[in-house]
Length: 71
Image (tube, rainbow, N blue to C red):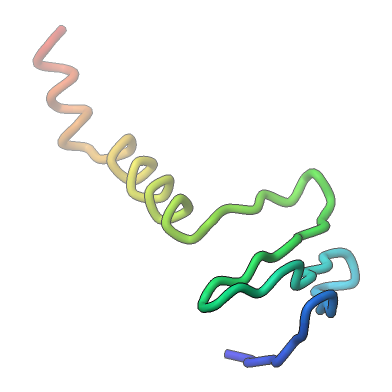
């Protein structure tokens, strides 16, 4: 993991097309702004994990077996 220090209004660039800017710092919270191409999805980590878990459940064979029993 790369750890960087940034002040308000300073930014980092990732892969030449993603810019992350520190917009505000209040206490222990930091507000970030992210500029990226529309085709790049951006999620909070907890939302991303939830999406991954739901996708895994949707492809789970036990769920398919339960669906077959309904039919």
